[in-house]
Amino acid sequence: DTFPTAMHISAVFAIEDKLLPAVELLIDTFKRLEAENEGIVKSGRTHLQDATPIKFSQEISGWRSSLERDAELLRMAVKPLYELALGGTAVGTGLNAPRGFGELVAAKCAELTGKPFVTAQNKFHALTSKDELVFAHGAIKATACDMMKIANDVRWLASGPRDGLGEIFIPENEPGSSIMPGKVNPTQCEAVTMVAVQVMGNDVAVGMAASQGNFELNVFMPVCAYNFLQSARLLAEAIVSFNDKCAVGITANREKMHHNLHNSLMLVTALNPYIGYENAAKTAKKAYKDNISLKEACVALGFLTAEKFDEVFHPEEMV
Figure 1 (cartoon, helix red, strand yellow):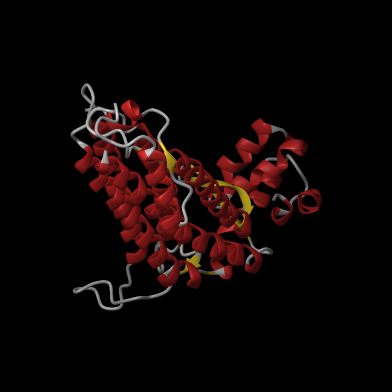
Figure 2 (figure 1 turned 60 degrees about the vertical axis):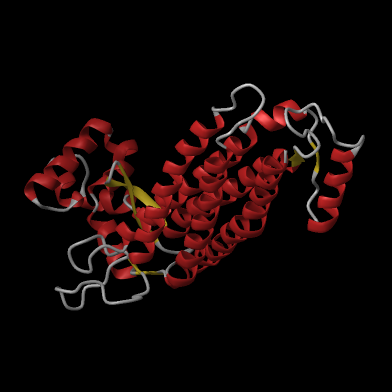
C-alpha cells in the first residue's frame, strides 16, 4: 500500500506544483499578446488553405482559452489523487495495520504537504486500480495536444523568412544550421512538439500498465509512475522554456499580414450577400486563373460595378 500512496502524492505535486504553474505562466503571456495585437487583422486559415479574416488577437485568444481549459481539466483530475491507499496493507483488508491507521497517516500526509490528502474509501480498489492516474494523465495528454497545436501554429506563422507565411517574428535563440549561414530554426516550437509526442506515447504506457491490476494488486505500478512523472516534468519544463524563449518575444509582421490578407481570394465571402455564393465562387476562380484582383474579376464578370464593389468590400470589417 506504500507504493500506490507514493504514486498519488508524487502525481499531485507534479501537477499542482510544476505543470499547472507552467500552464498559467503561458496563459498570462498570451493575455498580454492579445492586448498588444488587438487591432491587427490577418488571413484566417482552415485545412491549411486561405480562409476568411481573423484578428491576430482572436487567434491568440484561441491558444489562451485552450490552455485555460487544460488547467481546469488538470485541477479536476488531481482531486481523485488525493485518496491514499496506505492502510490497505497487502490485499486491501488492512491486515496487521492498527485501527484508524489509514485515516491517521492520510491526515499526517496532509499536514506535512499542505495537500488535502484523505484515506481511500475502498482499499481494494486503491491497490489494484490505477484509474485515477489514467484519468489524470489524460488531462496531461490533453495539455500536450494543445501545446502541439500552438507550437505548430507558431512555427508555421513564423515560417520563411521569405518563402513561408512570415506573419510573425519569433526570437532567434541560436544559429539554426551548420551548412546554411543565417538560417534560424524554430527550435523552441520543435522541442514542444517532441515533448508532446513523448507524452502521447507515455499515455499509452500508463493506460496499458493500469490495465494490469490482476486480482488484488497492480504490479505494473513502477512503469505507470515512471511515465506519468516523466510526462508532467517534461511538459512543464517545455512550456516554461517555450514561454521564456519564444512566446514572450512573438511580434506581428504587420506588413506581411496586411499583404496576405488583401491577396486572399477568400475575401470574396463578403460578396455573398450581394452577388450570391455561385457568382462569388466564379469571381474567386477567375481572379485566381487570370492572376487579377477580386475587384477586377467581379467587375469583368459584370456582377458589380467598381463603385459598388468598393462600397461593400471591407476586409477589416469581416471579423
